[in-house]
Image (cartoon, rainbow, N blue to C red; front, side, top):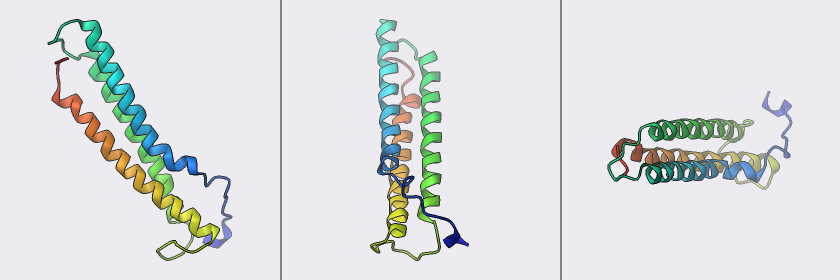
Length: 128
């Protein structure tokens, strides 16, 4: 039964709430730094991205996997126990569920942001 599980408030941290957007920001930063360095070293406007494209795809796959993992954990946190929606009572259980829901929504937004950032990989084939 769900009530037999003990709610661990030490694991219900606000840091997890920021993990999805931080993953997106790191993906965005690494992608643009990699492309900038690659194109600066190429010294030509029409240089193909080549190996940089492989790195950008790898960054995207890792970022999407991390965000999906955090989203899965937050989904489980949101569905913890047998309470009904909305989770707006002044209790530790509802606070735990609400943080899971908020984290899930931020992970969804971050997932979409990473996908849109990765569209650049398919659109631009050169350093122009």
